[in-house]
Image 1 (tube, rainbow, N blue to C red):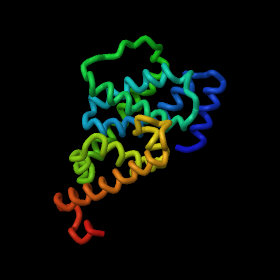
Image 2: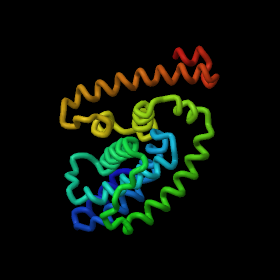
Image 3: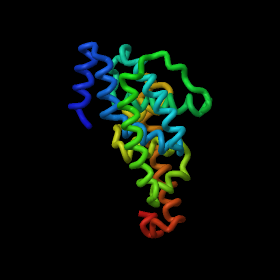
Image 4: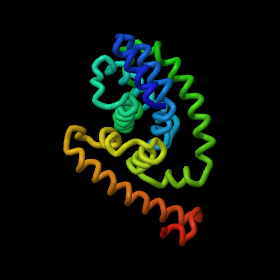
Length: 201
């Protein structure tokens, strides 16, 4: 997923073809963002609900998107907010006042394929270790290790004050990540997934 996808989304957006831009965004990035929600929420059902909120937010906000970050990064910002709203009130279904039918089919196909794939991945030992982390720790791990996002993008996604001091934000995140790696090494050693001499390396 790279610049080519971002360029196609931007071209559709520039042409005021918002439905196409939304579909391209969901098709191109939806699987990884849904995976992020499953990993951080720890539940397929909760992740599906949050993903639905994300799709609604994408549709509502797309016309006002200012391109201060990539579409990929913005979808993770939306995912973080959708996750928080779902956790505050998991039983509330958002009123659907937007014409989601144009992207809901794409989102549903993607959801079915992604959840089946993630069930297979969840069987391995490292995936089980992640379940012992907090949701915020899992979010940081996924964004940096799995998604290979820059510290700048991660700060945009995880920090509550995106326009604040970016250097301080990224420094905080780097420190958290170092502590997280140390915690994972301890957990892996305790689970017998890592020999003690490896854990110290």
